[in-house]
Amino acid sequence: MTGHPSKDIIGTEGKELKAKTIVLCITGSVAAVRCSEIARRLMRHGAEVFVVMSEMAKKIIHPYLMEWATGNPVVIELTGKIEHVALVGEHQSKADLVLVAPATANTISKIACGIDDTPVTSVVSTAFGSEIAVMIVPAMHESMYRHPIVAENIEKLETVGVEFVRPRIEEEKAKIAETEEISAAVMNRLTTGRDLVGIKILITAGPTLEHLDPVRVFTNKSSGKMGVSLAAEALSRGADVTMVYGPGKAVPPTNAKVVAVETTEEMYDAVASELRSKKYAVVIAAAAAADWRPEKAFDHKVPTSDVTEFDVKLKPTRKIIEAIRKINDQVFLVPFKAEYGLLDEELVERGYKRLIAAKADLIVINDVGREGAGFGVDTNEVFIVDKKREITHVPLTTKREAAKRILDVITEKMKSE
Ligand SMILES: Cc1cc2nc3c(=O)[nH]c(=O)nc-3n(C[C@H](O)[C@H](O)[C@H](O)COP(=O)(O)O)c2cc1C
Image (cartoon, rainbow, N blue to C red):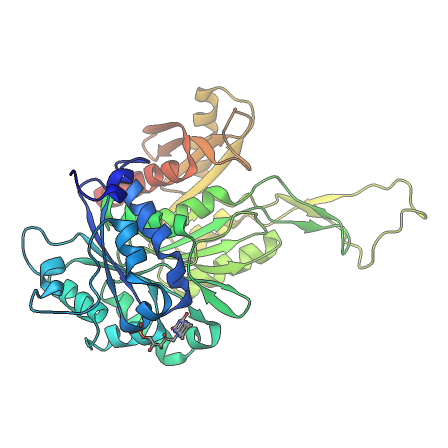
């Protein structure tokens, strides 16, 4: 016998979680039906998963399912074996992370108050004492999620380093995050450092659009994916992220605060107001804000029957980057610059000129004309240039990896300044 046959899947999709032990704590939410999928996704990336269930969780799914899914015995009560200590006590083979998924309003609030009266809450309490990372994935009706005390308890737990993978609000429910998002958050937490804890980052992302009339707009092909990847990466490293987001297609991470805007003027105002009201350490301007808007916008839909041809005069919009420096001369400013069809040298040269003009700290330049780079796709190639004209080239890779490299350079430069 080489162990439980269910463990054959360990590491079949990646080695990111190799040699990592995760304790998956399940509480009494219907979203518990997703737990075998979550456990097995983590296993496929190399993790060993042990499950702990609350009494109520047992009424929703049977522990046999989780024993099958993980190939390990499931803890449903604490016994003379002191299962909570065996899993997450202060010893050599303690687990690396406790994932409470799904987490009920009840369990979240108990954890926030230091109560431990279920196998799940006892494991979490012990993990705190052993300095093991705790990640919580809430699922409940929206009304419970909006309960001010539950909201306050979530905030309280965040201040002691608990990472939340926020639910999606749909059909009046705070639905458990997607398995992909949960596994990505776990991988990030265990594979990258938490080097951005306590850092406030403002990210602009997506396109903006300018109205010609109430139904017709001028816009560009930005999807918002690069900005969303930056937000997700920054969040996983512990940053406090606000996105000022134009109408992009990419879905912002649930943990980011999102200020939705439409026009460049709205983006400008939102950025200015954020900078005036909070102490941001970093601004990453990844949005493709429209540079021009029609001088005259019609307040009615221009009828095609009356007008066959007409001229539209475009006026430049306000430059958001210039405003940022005027409002805050301390913030670490990282604008993006999109070019089209240039050679590397020219790309860097134009970016550098822009960096100097904007009094920026770094600039990220990409050529949206290159294969696999730029608007709408999941990959990108970027050049990161600093004030001394030092260049970091990130060859074609996923936008998430490019985001990681950009944040690596930002943290490195901020330390050396
Ligand atoms: C079918 C069913 C589904 C439930 N779903 C949720 C839920 O999604 N979120 C939640 O906070 N509570 C939910 N509850 C209520 C909790 O199970 C209840 O608050 C329980 O005391 C939680 O105990 P636990 O946190 O120890 O698991 C549900 C209850 C039932 C019977």
